[in-house]
Image (cartoon, rainbow, N blue to C red):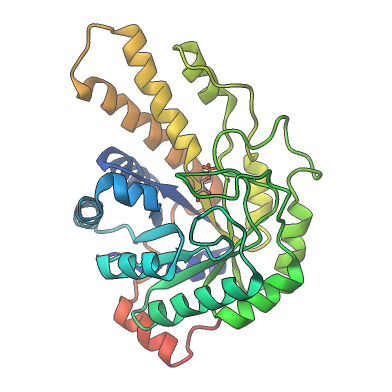
Length: 342
Ligand code: 13P
């Protein structure tokens, strides 16, 4: 099947009461890991690429790898999503290239660092919604700012500096007509999220629940949702890595989020750790090896294992065949006819 709309995947997740992992990619092996995990667990998938990933993989390579994924795994509903688009133009180029979903992150200015005004965020997100929906493409927006920096994008602050205000979130959804809303509840991108296991003081699940109460029909998105598992940290450090002690978002907190309107869960760091640990192990155990396949294969396997586990924990496992995907043209008609509520 062709790449599908993220809106449909999230609507179905909402009906089924489960969440869908959105996994970041930069290369062929990562795409293969995700698709293999999806087949093994029979899951719909969201594959996402940041601006940094698009530039690293040179856009056209990425696009054709994703087309290959739909050919090799025709039974899996697969979304190609732009992570943290920094401007209307970035979202436009992604849509032109064939992304079926885009994030317009107007919570920051186009430099990807400076927090913006509410008015700027509404204006740019609204513009992307109009452009995207005309083509059946899904739009994620963000209100409040995450902490940390990922691929050069992020306010670089701690996760608590710009938490989402629930009333502002309501106004933002109404004024933009977006499909999915990323909120800031204390998480940040990257490995160093929390200096100890998060509590309600540092990971504001109560804020998420409050937002869901006010916006019960809106698909919420949790960014910065890697759990940074201790065993993955240990493998990296055991084979020469130098990760400092750190904590991520516990899976049970994500599951609490899923029970309260979270439908998309962004995970990148955990996969980076799994890949790096596997490669370091081969380099340490077999220093005579120099065929890239000798370390890329275990790296691919390690990421697949982790993605399959998350798909099961988020609840998307078993749901790949639940529905018949609507074409993007069909989605555009639904948006034009107001058949999709926003
Ligand atoms: P992690 O760094 O926690 O994996 O978050 C990734 C993310 O939110 C991508 O947008």
